[in-house]
Image 1 (cartoon, rainbow, N blue to C red):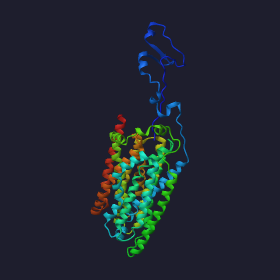
Image 2 (cartoon, rainbow, N blue to C red):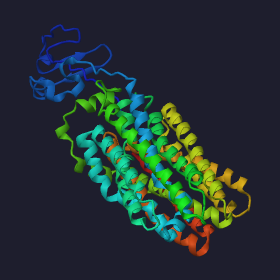
Image 3 (cartoon, rainbow, N blue to C red):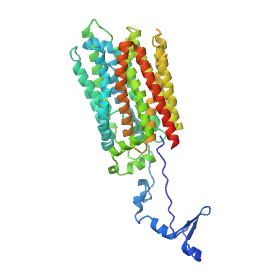
Image 4 (tube, one colour):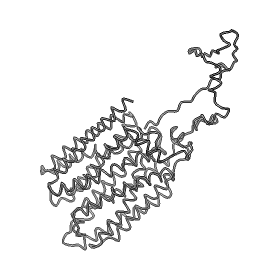
Length: 492
């Protein structure tokens, strides 16, 4: 991310030459004007105007924070930044795992709790529903109380929700597992907006995009593990509900133990910011007076930014489509390949792991080239192509084809997530990264809710083909919105 460069002004006093010597007016023409020259540029100024425009004796108010008292902006990179990134990525991983752990074995949980597929879908949709109203107070908390407080809330609620799930093992306790999932969904609100904040306040200018992609990668890896482990830990033992409950219990207790350990690590590792900022842009922002920040004004500024509004919609479409495909993947695959729960999880794993590679490669590419608009548009178009291919090969009866097309789709669709974050930060600087990321995620959740419910109904009533074509049409619309961003920014 290119946050901008600082330009220091050189003030030339009217009674001095560049070398510090005095000037005298000896002619009648020079009595009205004084001439200043540096050897290459000749400037004629009215002395009265100069006197009126001179700064007051205390020039600190006219200087950038880093320029006061002639102090240089000091920056430094700390090894701790890798520990902060690792701990955050891991508890984000566990939260994402808890989001998808029900949906990938929808048919098994339907049988165990004796509920409909829509009820199981809501265990995923609740993550999106909770996010929309809570993201604004959560973003306010991030900007006012800092990274550490927000991280502690996210990790703590994540662990609490995991322990409540342990009490939901029983055929008649669906309401308990839903309550636990609501707690985890609130934890998610304090997690999804942090990647860009961690990257910008802890990492250097040429590391920001890669660090952001790595932070998002943790969440994606959690989805991947959520696709892989539940079918392994909880096989379909429809004839033995007790064994099914025992297997579910193992999954829940294991998740609770890991999330508790990560909460403890969060307490000791994550800090608001390093002692010295990692970049000059962060040095300027960190020395600015916090009381001047207005969250309401920041929101207003973002909604006045036309390119950002278009990015909100296009990002919401793409990410919402990913949420919908992830939630309904079990129903899509099982419709055409009955009894393939384990392979369904592996297909989901392929989808996300390929996306993880896409995220890292795109992050490195952005750090090297800074071609935000072009990279975003290309990845979006390739995601559309991947979705079309996946849609029309799903019913061919060959699982190997599905593995391949899911990998292609995941590489571009999941790989787009950190690109959207960084593009949003780039076109909204110097607004808070947490605010822009929070709004992007809010729109992603809104579209995720709408897409999951509509595609789920289309899949139930007419089959997976209809639901996937619905998503293809919306992604095509997203390409049009991204194209408008390029034209607007080029005009300005």
